[in-house]
Each structure stands twice: as structure tokens, then as C-alpha cells.
Image (cartoon, rainbow, N blue to C red; front, side):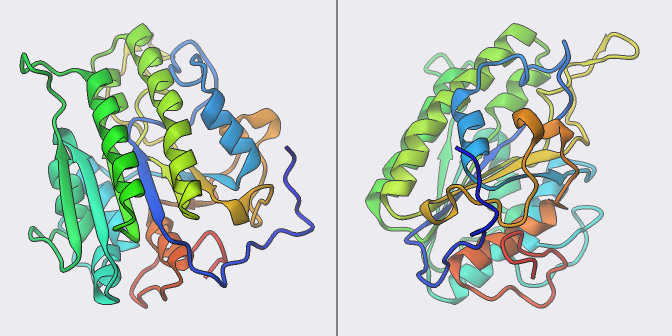
Length: 300
């Protein structure tokens, strides 16, 4: 389906029942090559969504994961995780009396429960947390099982109808890529891609909006192509952004389409600091004046 730039503005007059932010950490954007596990995987659902809904890539180059989550939640282009911030996304949502849920695996406990919340360590009014273990019954890390758990709980949360905003942080791909096994990393990409379909379907059934992104890349560069040495660390490569919603289908909202569906050919449309203002815009909530990021929906 080709996107229609002639009627490019979605109707946001009616607030969505739910906005769901899915962070697939480790999913970065880079050129196709033998070191890129993402471009070597079959990602039919991700690719279909990228073709049918507004899609962009965002700069993601903070020093570490915690700083990136602070940027994601604060809407500020902070340089490190100690920088002072103002009102964050979670506190704004709580302040207008809406319900929110944070789903995270054990690798993202501090990142999502604290740094995303402006380094706050206690729950806000109307906020629930749902931690998910990465380990199986033998206390061994089991990435496929962790993905299954996170997406199962995500679908259950959507079906419950309790929440206006849900954010799920899945570190499975980052964890697998850090291990350096290329074939296993490709498999993990494909597991995530298959899980996307059911989650997107549930969110759309609730007249909601699913925002797919990542805090960092990793799986797109499993070795240094110049030295041929393994590279299993988070990268400074851009990360994807897809806005999946009925009112957005077939529209670009002013974003450029990726030539032949190759996101690596796009220039960044923004940065991680734009995600919080975008979420607020989608929810019909005014962004905090202290946020440096802008909504990628209306450019404000």
C-alpha cells in the first residue's frame, strides 16, 4: 500500500483509547551487510508496517542505556543520566489523571522504572509496573521465553482496557546481540517480528496507537566491518520509529518514505527526545514547555 501525501494529516480530534510505546532495544538501523542481523532476518510484519504507516529513523547517540531512557521519558536532549530535568512524560500523564503501565524485563528495571521517570524511584498515582524475568525455571537466560512473556503480558494489558498509556521495554535483542552469535541474533529478530503482529492487532482493536521504536541499536552491527572484529556493544546508529494506528494508515505525516523500504537510506527525522512529545501529542495532552523535543506528528 502506498502512502498518500495528499491527505497526510491524521484526525486527532478524538483521543485514542490507548497509546502503546514498544521499545525493541538492540534494533538499530544501518546499511545491509554481513554484520547486520536485522537486514539478514525475515521481518515481514515490521516491513509491512513500515510501508503502511508513518515511519522515520531517530538519532540515538547518548552514552549509555540509562541516559537514553532519561531522554526518552523527559523529552530532553540530556548529555548524561545525571542532568536535571523538568516534568517527564510519566508525571504529565499521571498529573491529568490517566492510567499507565510499564512492562520491563530484568535488564531494563532501572532504565524504565527510574530513568524513564526522570530518575524517580517510586510509582506515580495511576502507574503500575510489571517486571518480567529473562530467566527460565533453571535460572538461565532464555531470550525466546522472555519475548513470549513480554508480548503475552502486553497483549493482556491491552485487552484489560485499564490503561491509557503502556510502555514495554524489551531487551531481548540487545541481550542476544551482546552474546555475539549472529545466527541466534537473526532468530531473535524474527521472533520479535512475529510477535509484533498480534500486539499491533490488539492495539488497533482497542482503537489505540502503537508506537514502535528502540533506545539503541546493537543487532545491526555485530562486527566492525573495517577490522572484521566482533562488536557486541550498543551502537550510535539511528533507531526506527513507526506509528501504527487506523488514522495513520497510508499517511506519511510529512515524513519521508524509505526507498525500497530500506530505512538506512533515510536521514534522521529527529531524535529520542522527540518520542515523549509525540506520545503526548497522540494522547491529546500539551507537552511541557521545558521539553526540547518536538512531536513528529505536528512538528510542535
